[in-house]
Length: 478
Image (cartoon, rainbow, N blue to C red; front, side):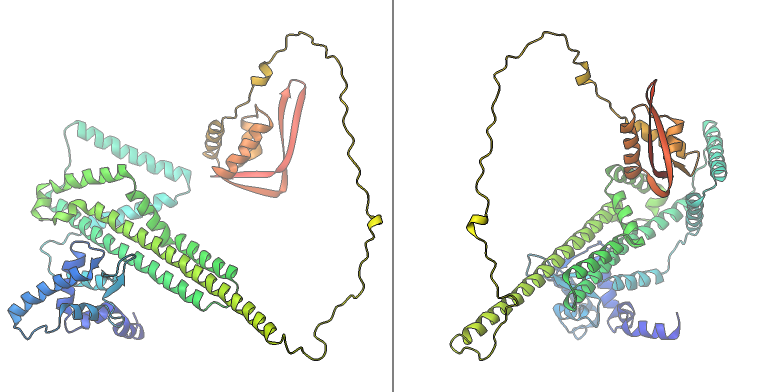
């Protein structure tokens, strides 16, 4: 927030340019009604021009025919110019009609303007409770002391027990109308901000795609190094805090059970008289469907960017193959041009002028393979009773039971070696069970191998035979 940064923002940021524009009230009000209010992601150019023409007609009727003299198409094209950056104009795949979408900077400016209007009721209790709950989650999620965590859970259980006793006695504490309005306003604010976050996430992916295209166009190294750099950057974006948070939110939305629970809770909230007194917008009822639609649009945008990047790389490969063919054709044309005019002097040299002579009689002759002779022996058939139960006897390793044993052991300690786990529950199926432990360490648990230490693991085959395996120390961690 120093002077130079703010001066740069005032000159370059689209949101600040919108606030300084001469027609800022027209731009902000129209874009708010067209995009923000109905949560519209993409609008066709013809539909948006018709909507703006209706708005301009109403304004001209109020301010006179001389006001807003330009056409709706000119206004939209001007707002989508790069130096303005208030709208994004593009062409969807398989369509020749222009599409418009709101930019994140414009949405931020509209939300800020919306916050300037006076509110009849400003709630603060719900915000304080939200902050307090977040701090409790931070403490509970980072607490490593088992005694402290157990004490916190015991206190929570004690509070729930007291609440149960009071409820059974008929003493039920409910929220008054003021508290209900406070919490519902907080819900509406967070819901609107969440819808705006999707547009910004999509914008960030689009900027990533543009930077990758620029790197491909200016790349001078090998194709393998280019792909390694691009895929590494894509993995870094997916593994970043924003990528993991978006993936967790998307997983929450894709759960049908959570959608049903959310819809049931929202229906109950909208039936409360205090909430109905606030006159919420009808689309609040389907806000979670708006989130789902916005998330799907973001996912489709990412998929389209990946397809475009693939085609871009294919075009680069085609151009590289064409360049190689041009070089080969150049060599052929130069060879044909000197066919009738032989060059003077030495053309080429051969390092070895002696020929390798291979005489025919020095090669070995064909040797036929010996034929097998089968002896005509009479087989003695002995009728004996043979126990075939051993053919059907199989050993089944119960991996689920082994995994439960590991989890129970890890509840008592931060980390354990494989030998300690087996000492607590000896092997009953020998080497197969030991291999199952190693496979669980790779698939289901966090396991590391200490090459510097060697552990010995024993098991009994029968009463007189014991086997031993020596292997590097395997450590299971919680």
